[in-house]
Length: 197
Image: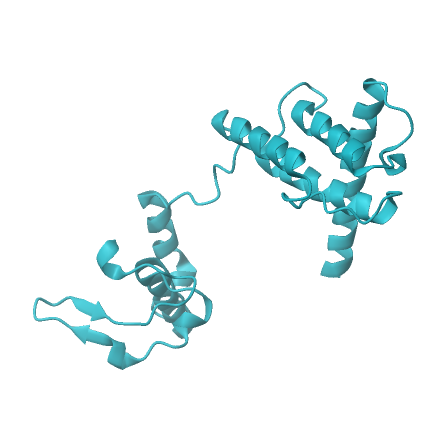
């Protein structure tokens, strides 16, 4: 079911961006369709023009994520329907002008505040209180206790995924001042140490 939904979403994204590209091409007087372009150089030129000048129908700039989605949607379409397929339009070594145009556009959009601004926002004190005080997080039941332990491991020790399951009681050492020192090996993706916090 998820695969079917993902396929439909991918199809819709590709259709949306190809329609936007074809509308742009028509507006600037380019003949035929993007599929009919018969050289890498002309394809790159037209795509650079599109990405440099593309905006929403209301005239507002697209978000960074939209530009990234457009790039991959157009790449999928070109690799399926173009006369000169396959073309690696996402390869910066082959399509360097396109890469520079998209990268420049993304930098401008980020400077305008249209980048990924919510991706890694820290929890506020109020959000932390809400999580800890939620009825399902109360340690008066086995499930609540497990959730509370999982939360503390993730939040205070920065553990990810399966690292929770690999903890051993021997890794926890009580200090004389009442605190606890935790020793664990760093995973490939978790290159932080507790002393850096």
